[in-house]
Image (tube, rainbow, N blue to C red; front, side, top):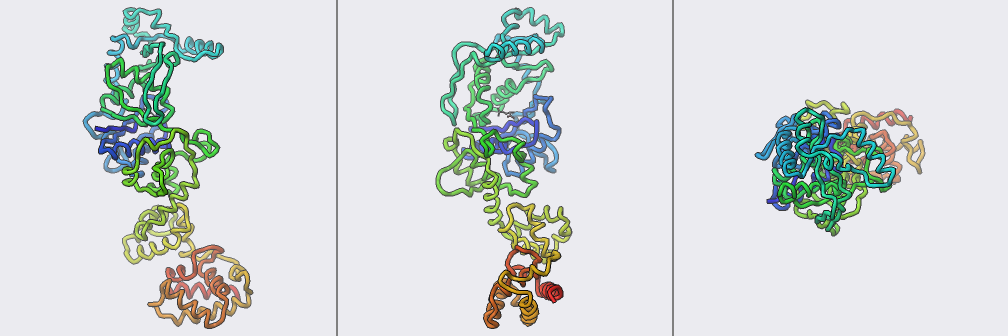
Length: 498
Ligand code: GLU
């Protein structure tokens, strides 16, 4: 059975890199009818962010990545829950488990107690740096303190940590599913702290114990963990466990090829959510950061991603986070929303902008109309958050200067004649003709019959209806506004120009 996991540390909000790791782990498992689980790695107590876990879970939920097992959102989506029978899935709730395994390592002499004070370690590091040597613990306590004496000192309450006794000869070789064979010299691998002086395990012990006890078959994670893999493999060896397969994903880069960071823009998924990106667009975009199925197709829904995904098609090099591409995906997905779906997605932004009254959504006639209004701008905006400002002119005409009514090849005198004529003509139209297509056909015929220039009519018509230099076309706006409002707006324009 394929079992993958996403194991974030709640030291911040879910960022796009984390979303990609979660997504690839999810896709890989789902493609092979396996299970995907979420584990929270909160052993670094100093860097915890209070609402980090909740944010991570909510962002995954928003993205449509559903865990089969592990830490998840409770029904109300505002609390944390867990599901599955290999839990608990939050590391701070598993401390006794790690203690037990650390004991086992101590007994096997695969780990040892270390009593070195921070000052000594600092001095050691300074010396090593000065002598241009690799930094790392020098095994002082392993070499100088016999295990029985160390036991006694621990019993007497002396401050200590537990370290991995890493063999310093030879090299660790493993096969990475993305990079192929990886070789790392063991002399470069530190005697990692496994249990800290506060009794908490470090990530390195916890990750191995958990991946084993939770029966993880494939570890898919960021490239930054490659250099830790020899430590993990050493632990698997010491415990006598079969290690999982590893796949280390390439870095995400800024456009200047530096490592993706907050400094160059937003990295948290929730920031993109708040800006009005659609989850399916962000997911599709993130899927392509490092993976490419080959071929022309770029739009992939989650189900299609599951079918198409494979680790062989993940590149080794870093991939650039290009916001313009994300914008392109978002526009593509906006285009695919029907009026009702668009209204549903846009609703929170409309309410927040106080453009409409939340209670009115229940009124079918009103919501159908509002959906048509949104359709006017669907292909003109990049994100949902731009919609309130974009449709504001439908609710009230901005105060525009009279010159705006004059077409670039026309005159004010012409406007004075054209608008009243057009108004008189529109008043003769029947209500059943009040649709984009019929309005367009009728008005264009009328323009021709009167030998007007098209622009000299349609430009002031559009400006009178929108009050804007740029807007959707006049027929679409007129159809949505309805006859009475169009008449009012044309009268206001006449008033302005005369
Ligand atoms: N807790 C680690 C992180 O947040 C997970 C690394 C791993 O997947 O092994 O990056």
